[in-house]
Length: 322
Length: 309
Image (cartoon, rainbow over the protein chains, first blue to last red):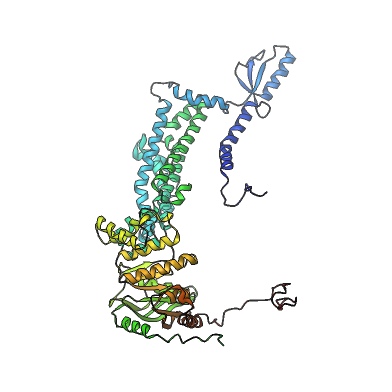
């Protein structure tokens, strides 16, 4: 049809309304599936929640049993002539309905910890963010300069990158026990895991980004009289800043993926402690709420950073699109 | 057999002759002596340039032309100090050149403005590198920006400029360093014909007004004749000097001269030098051509193309 844009045109932007529709759908579709499974009984609901145990001695009100088990007990009760048990179809305890998770977003914050020594949810979240922050900042303080030097000077690259390349294949959690032995059981080893998980990737990614700087810009600056350190500080670094910023945004996302492992090391803490604790109490609504919160924090911080990038690097066309 | 009678490209009016005499009497700015460059590749050693020698005098405008692959860019990169010659040497004011420096300004074909700096900061760059204070650099930069007519865009970023404007900034940026010679590597090659014409006129205007020697690489014959005092014609495989032509078109130049006898004579000479087809170049194959049922060409309705099947 004339004038209408195709849905699948290679590397072409969609019209605004369609782009918006798809963006909303990307969240709405999974939510809709979750609602279907939760609220429409005949789709899944593999359990029966007992409302009246009847004559079955081991049934209790509120208990969840397999549908097959319930059916067997029903038949047995009929044969023996005792009161028939009653119940409704239900989903397993580990799949709470959306509205339960939704309300947990609020109640999880207001629920008082079961023991004095335990932490409130906002304290746990705060602690997790602190761990990520220090792990990422320490890694960047060392990793970014080394990466830039590797990308700028072949000598630095040849000295560093082979080892870094080897080290990045070593799984960060493997250093957990070592980190505890060296840094104790509190925050030290957790920050160390985030650091190890981020640092080696960071050096290589930053080095590659630095190497991608257009050589013509370096040559132009040479013909304008730039020398040694001027080349590094006046051309290479300002030239890669927008790409470097983008790299750090992506790496920050990776740092989050190391969080759960890091927080299990030594004394369990932060959001991981909250999640494992709530799972132990079978408060799966809180578990889901906490997991989704991590996602929201990640998405939100990335949004803030991308806006900041647009501000800082208004001269860079690519930044405006990301 | 030529349809038109053209004078010899060597013929010069008295005015032009006097100008060349004066020009040759001026000091030598850049001297190239037996310059050669070979590249080692998997297929063996490739000679890009061989035994190039020439001189440019003060305030002279020299164009370098040649077929693609004759090493024009390699030549200018060696003059700039961005590549090391395998043999021979480049002398600037009699002193050998080893590395890039602000005494040889360069304008590249690709836009090499620093995208993170405004027009003004781009032009200030070289001055800041050589230790000028910010305020001096700013004042001088604004003068150069004025000279290329971009005062209004001093605070714009390169991404906001058109291709022609970007190259004007690049020229201002190179000139701000007060170089002895301005090296230009097909600077207008990526521009559309109209913008290119304007840029050529601008460049001549600037060149007339300041003390600068220009070495300009192009593959456009008209551009070379319009701009140059002398044209260095290279030939390929390996790149060697074919001929150094004195352009007999009088100055000041204008675009109407493109149909003057001197211009056409020079152009014809250049064409003969450059467009002689190499023996190993394959001709167009007509085998797959399809008959075109068109009676325009011969007027009697038969096909235009006979080499079919």
